[in-house]
Image 1 (cartoon, rainbow over the protein chains, first blue to last red):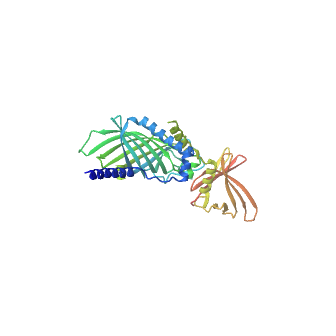
Image 2 (image 1 turned 90 degrees about the horizontal axis):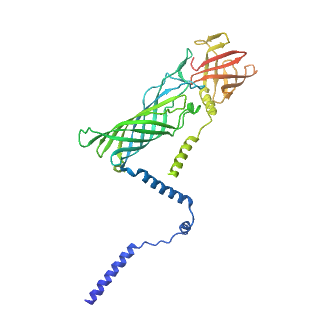
Image 3 (image 1 turned 120 degrees about the vertical axis):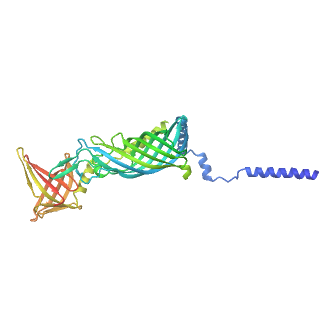
Length: 265
Length: 139
């Protein structure tokens, strides 16, 4: 009995020691460099850390009522066209308008979107996307020097752009449900486009294009519950994309697909 | 929040900071448009204070001039030399230094009224008389 008691105590001690051994960290001899850096001041690292903490704290304060957030990836095709009024613009150069195509041209876009609910009541979304825009151009006025030159313009619209687009939408559920898996939404909100691409040499002449563009975004979305969302948005230029006296409104029709990021990655 | 605003403002400033000199852009675009083409004279207009007269060369054998991308030029009269595009007093000009077939040195300046991919109007003014040349790349 006594022997068995001693054996039991020995086993308990052994188990306790083993548990302790598993819990205690493997002590690695720190390198000389890491020891040095622990004592040295690293202002950049500290500032980055402080900035990260500050941003997190501030965003937490601002977005306190924004919850149920889901991240989606999006991509699609966008048809764009510029409506141009050259006004009293003058330059040494002229551009023949006979070969100009006044149509919506196709481009593409990809990005991500955060969908959520504000104060447990209002649906919203924030979209960030990179847009490769290919645009047609419609000129409302032209000049001619008959019989030498027919219809021409002193301004030539660029037709290729790369934009970073940031949009905020208010979403409203449409009370139309053909079945329990389908939801329809109407969305509206502003979008700010930042032109990342350079202007062509034709427009560098007077530095015609602006960097930023404000557009109004309205659209409908069809959500096949938990699988994907198809959307169609129309973006109407609110501010001119070019500097005065040329007035240019860039309008786009975007058709695309949204999928939950967690389903893909 | 202050720091976030500083980061945002800096990004906006950086995006707007890079602006190329517009005169350089005008000159390089003008070179691009005129070089490596044969320019045929279609019309010639003489404008005085009281009268404007026009001559047409469309459909006829006419004067032409070539501007090459190595900055040399030659025309149908056998004049060869070099050319440059410059901007003086807000006016875009083509400046030609050349030699005639008889090796006489020539120097002339035409001002550009308008320039396109396939057409250009050049002019010069002497004693209140303006002479305009309407060139086209197809004849």
